[in-house]
Image 1 (cartoon, rainbow, N blue to C red):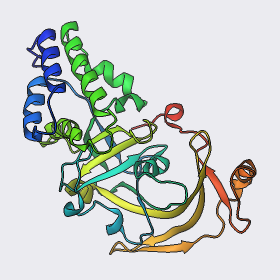
Image 2: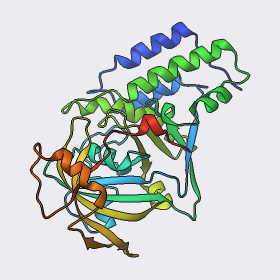
Image 3: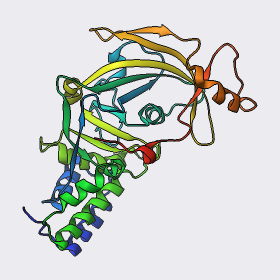
Amino acid sequence: MKEISLSICELKKLIEDFNSVDTKSASISELIDKFNYIKENFIQTTYGLNSGTKGKICRARIGEFSSVTELWCPPSDRVTKYGRVNDINESVFYGCFGSNAQLGSIEEVGGQVGDIVTQLFCEISPEKKQLVDLISLGHAEKLFTCYQDIREKQYENINKDQVTKNELIKTWLNDSFVKKINKGNEHEYKKTIAFSQSFLRTNFYKGTLFPSVASIGHCINIVLPKAIADDYVTPISARMVKIIGRNEAGAFLFQYLKESLSINSSGEILWKELSKFNEDANQAIAAAKGKIKINENITICFEGDKYLIHQSGISL
């Protein structure tokens, strides 16, 4: 196995130089070149998702929509700002995965009380069986139940000096990737785009996994190039909810409006209207009375009294 030839001091200096780059003027290509030099012979573990994996992939969009096309990757000409993993005019598939996917996807689109949100649930296509070679960034791997076993295997037969160098790069890379970027400073995403593109351009990696910054790391985001999403990801169901309120723990109170009966071959979602949903919601309704106005003609339920990620983990 090839080793990282740069010394610890050299790596720290290069990282310091990278951190100081002015992203208003620097190009993503320049940042990729700088990062490629730092990560030469760096060891990064990949992960995969199996078809039928517990915890479906979920996308959300504020508003009422009835076709998969409206809930899929946005047209490239509509992408007018940098994102954590996308360049301007780059259409990619953003989704949430795992125990909290349906909650996290609403956090990701900035759902507020009063909003109607349409959510699309997907899985890895049974024909493909699995989607492998996903790069884990932002310490996402620590949320997987298999993390410790993989980490130990990753560093088998590697000397302590190389482990130290690799961990130095990994910690900096992961911390930088989930840095909160304030509105108006989207140019700072050039660095995280560079990190992701540096791996994806090798044609070995198919996508990126990272903790949702919007939900403070409570769920995992999966981002795929549109071509990979089109090839590997299959929509299986959808629902429409109205956000009625939130409790102190961040749980959502929903009114369930519609659930999908089916999704036809053209991507049209056929809906079933819901006036009541989840007969076990009585306790949640009782807890909400006195705090949130309840319409007696509908049933409202809590979804996620607390985020589950650290309690349940995600098995891959």
